[in-house]
Image (tube, rainbow, N blue to C red; front, side, top):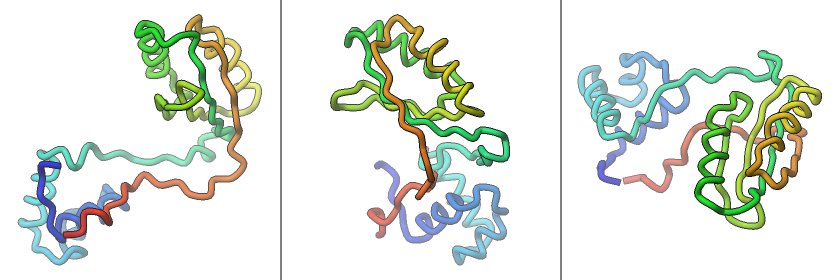
Length: 159
Protein backbone atom coordinates (compact mmCIF):
# COMPACT_ATOMS: atom_id res chain seq x y z
CA UNK A 1 0.00 0.00 0.00
CA UNK A 2 1.46 3.35 -1.04
CA UNK A 3 -0.74 5.59 1.10
CA UNK A 4 0.22 6.04 4.73
CA UNK A 5 -2.89 6.06 6.89
CA UNK A 6 -3.16 7.61 10.32
CA UNK A 7 -5.92 7.16 12.91
CA UNK A 8 -8.03 9.97 11.39
CA UNK A 9 -7.88 8.28 7.98
CA UNK A 10 -8.85 4.92 9.46
CA UNK A 11 -11.75 6.50 11.34
CA UNK A 12 -12.92 8.19 8.14
CA UNK A 13 -12.76 4.87 6.29
CA UNK A 14 -14.71 3.08 9.02
CA UNK A 15 -17.43 5.74 8.98
CA UNK A 16 -17.86 5.90 5.22
CA UNK A 17 -17.91 2.11 4.92
CA UNK A 18 -20.95 2.20 7.22
CA UNK A 19 -22.58 5.13 5.37
CA UNK A 20 -21.04 6.37 2.13
CA UNK A 21 -23.67 9.09 1.87
CA UNK A 22 -22.71 10.76 5.12
CA UNK A 23 -22.38 14.53 4.83
CA UNK A 24 -18.82 15.78 5.17
CA UNK A 25 -19.83 17.96 8.13
CA UNK A 26 -21.25 14.93 9.96
CA UNK A 27 -18.22 12.85 9.04
CA UNK A 28 -15.88 15.53 10.31
CA UNK A 29 -17.76 15.68 13.61
CA UNK A 30 -17.70 11.90 14.05
CA UNK A 31 -13.95 11.62 13.45
CA UNK A 32 -12.96 14.72 15.39
CA UNK A 33 -11.82 16.99 12.54
CA UNK A 34 -12.99 20.32 11.22
CA UNK A 35 -14.75 20.37 7.86
CA UNK A 36 -11.88 21.40 5.55
CA UNK A 37 -9.25 18.94 6.81
CA UNK A 38 -11.81 16.13 6.71
CA UNK A 39 -12.78 16.99 3.12
CA UNK A 40 -9.10 17.13 2.09
CA UNK A 41 -8.44 13.72 3.63
CA UNK A 42 -11.41 12.16 1.83
CA UNK A 43 -10.25 13.75 -1.43
CA UNK A 44 -6.71 12.40 -0.89
CA UNK A 45 -8.05 8.90 -0.10
CA UNK A 46 -10.08 8.96 -3.32
CA UNK A 47 -7.14 10.19 -5.41
CA UNK A 48 -4.90 7.49 -3.90
CA UNK A 49 -7.43 4.81 -4.85
CA UNK A 50 -8.09 3.80 -1.24
CA UNK A 51 -11.71 4.86 -1.72
CA UNK A 52 -12.58 3.03 -4.91
CA UNK A 53 -16.20 4.07 -5.45
CA UNK A 54 -19.41 4.91 -3.65
CA UNK A 55 -22.51 2.77 -4.13
CA UNK A 56 -26.02 2.37 -2.81
CA UNK A 57 -26.84 -1.07 -1.46
CA UNK A 58 -30.29 -2.40 -2.32
CA UNK A 59 -32.38 -5.00 -0.50
CA UNK A 60 -32.54 -8.03 -2.77
CA UNK A 61 -35.64 -9.47 -1.11
CA UNK A 62 -37.60 -6.22 -1.41
CA UNK A 63 -36.83 -6.39 -5.14
CA UNK A 64 -38.15 -9.96 -5.43
CA UNK A 65 -34.78 -11.71 -5.62
CA UNK A 66 -35.70 -14.55 -3.26
CA UNK A 67 -33.14 -17.15 -4.39
CA UNK A 68 -29.48 -16.73 -3.47
CA UNK A 69 -27.46 -19.51 -5.10
CA UNK A 70 -23.78 -20.37 -4.99
CA UNK A 71 -22.57 -22.34 -7.99
CA UNK A 72 -19.19 -24.00 -8.37
CA UNK A 73 -18.19 -24.19 -12.02
CA UNK A 74 -15.77 -26.51 -13.80
CA UNK A 75 -14.60 -25.58 -17.27
CA UNK A 76 -13.96 -28.19 -19.96
CA UNK A 77 -10.31 -27.16 -20.09
CA UNK A 78 -7.95 -24.49 -18.80
CA UNK A 79 -7.29 -22.83 -22.13
CA UNK A 80 -7.07 -19.04 -22.04
CA UNK A 81 -9.84 -18.74 -24.64
CA UNK A 82 -12.28 -20.74 -22.49
CA UNK A 83 -11.47 -18.74 -19.36
CA UNK A 84 -11.84 -15.47 -21.27
CA UNK A 85 -15.13 -16.59 -22.83
CA UNK A 86 -16.51 -17.64 -19.45
CA UNK A 87 -15.36 -14.49 -17.65
CA UNK A 88 -16.75 -12.22 -20.38
CA UNK A 89 -20.08 -14.07 -20.21
CA UNK A 90 -20.16 -13.83 -16.39
CA UNK A 91 -19.49 -10.08 -16.60
CA UNK A 92 -22.50 -9.68 -18.87
CA UNK A 93 -25.00 -11.62 -16.70
CA UNK A 94 -27.09 -9.49 -14.36
CA UNK A 95 -27.99 -12.53 -12.24
CA UNK A 96 -24.34 -13.07 -11.32
CA UNK A 97 -23.34 -10.69 -8.54
CA UNK A 98 -19.97 -12.31 -7.80
CA UNK A 99 -17.63 -14.37 -9.96
CA UNK A 100 -14.44 -15.65 -8.39
CA UNK A 101 -11.67 -17.66 -10.02
CA UNK A 102 -10.77 -20.22 -7.36
CA UNK A 103 -8.17 -22.88 -6.60
CA UNK A 104 -9.08 -26.48 -5.90
CA UNK A 105 -11.28 -28.95 -7.75
CA UNK A 106 -13.50 -26.30 -9.36
CA UNK A 107 -12.53 -23.32 -11.49
CA UNK A 108 -15.05 -20.61 -10.52
CA UNK A 109 -17.45 -19.74 -7.76
CA UNK A 110 -20.55 -17.75 -8.70
CA UNK A 111 -23.09 -16.03 -6.50
CA UNK A 112 -26.36 -15.81 -8.37
CA UNK A 113 -29.53 -13.92 -7.39
CA UNK A 114 -32.85 -14.78 -9.04
CA UNK A 115 -36.56 -14.46 -8.32
CA UNK A 116 -37.45 -18.14 -7.85
CA UNK A 117 -36.36 -21.72 -8.57
CA UNK A 118 -37.91 -21.68 -12.04
CA UNK A 119 -35.81 -18.62 -12.86
CA UNK A 120 -32.70 -20.40 -11.56
CA UNK A 121 -33.43 -23.56 -13.52
CA UNK A 122 -33.86 -21.51 -16.70
CA UNK A 123 -30.63 -19.60 -15.99
CA UNK A 124 -28.75 -22.83 -15.28
CA UNK A 125 -29.94 -24.86 -18.25
CA UNK A 126 -30.44 -22.18 -20.90
CA UNK A 127 -27.45 -19.99 -20.15
CA UNK A 128 -24.79 -21.41 -17.84
CA UNK A 129 -24.72 -25.06 -18.95
CA UNK A 130 -25.34 -24.03 -22.55
CA UNK A 131 -21.87 -22.47 -22.66
CA UNK A 132 -19.57 -24.81 -24.62
CA UNK A 133 -16.69 -24.01 -22.26
CA UNK A 134 -18.59 -25.19 -19.14
CA UNK A 135 -18.22 -28.83 -18.15
CA UNK A 136 -20.32 -28.85 -14.98
CA UNK A 137 -21.96 -26.76 -12.27
CA UNK A 138 -22.75 -27.70 -8.70
CA UNK A 139 -25.25 -25.45 -6.92
CA UNK A 140 -25.91 -24.80 -3.24
CA UNK A 141 -28.74 -22.57 -2.09
CA UNK A 142 -28.30 -20.09 0.74
CA UNK A 143 -30.71 -21.02 3.53
CA UNK A 144 -29.89 -18.12 5.83
CA UNK A 145 -27.43 -15.28 5.64
CA UNK A 146 -25.40 -15.37 8.86
CA UNK A 147 -23.11 -12.47 7.96
CA UNK A 148 -22.98 -10.16 4.99
CA UNK A 149 -20.87 -7.05 4.87
CA UNK A 150 -19.27 -4.90 2.24
CA UNK A 151 -16.95 -3.33 4.84
CA UNK A 152 -13.29 -4.33 4.56
CA UNK A 153 -11.40 -5.22 7.75
CA UNK A 154 -9.17 -2.32 8.77
CA UNK A 155 -7.77 -3.57 12.11
CA UNK A 156 -4.46 -4.64 10.58
CA UNK A 157 -3.86 -1.01 9.53
CA UNK A 158 -4.02 0.52 13.00
CA UNK A 159 -1.12 2.96 13.23
